[in-house]
Image (cartoon, rainbow, N blue to C red; front, side, top):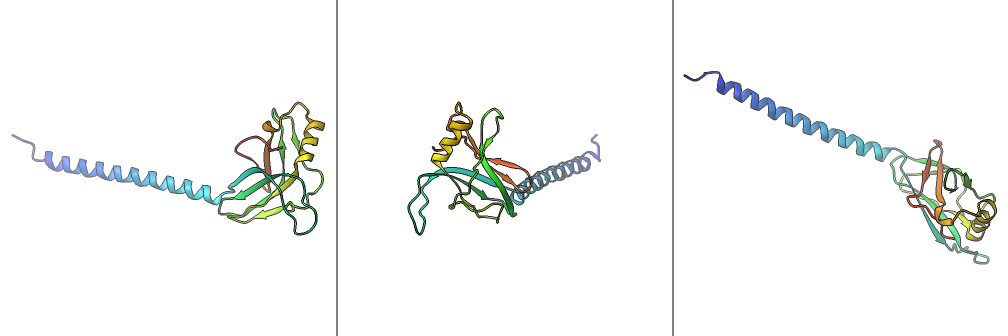
Length: 162
């Protein structure tokens, strides 16, 4: 003799399992969406470094420059308040002491999807290294920018083209 309640109990258990799986999948999808939107809305700045030869509209062409370019890839505006080159082993930073006429002025508010260029003549970078840290190689310096929130954002790879 078979149990008359076995089939309905099995169906109820199967429906419960299906609902649990659907709930777990929607929970995972919701968590993923929150992570994506939170990262996009937060301060998201990418720092790149290159060697540049800025061309002024008038006057003589300057020497080669180290160009630090912070780009706002997030959805919210972010303030850039400072920048420099950090030495290895927490030995401090090299910062530019005189204004370059090719650089954007700081502090600067980066709107979403924009970037600025901050220049430092390569000859002055070499002089700063030889004066303040003669044992440090340019390949070990880490370019960074400081945000208005106090956070420091570094370039992905260390090294400065001098």
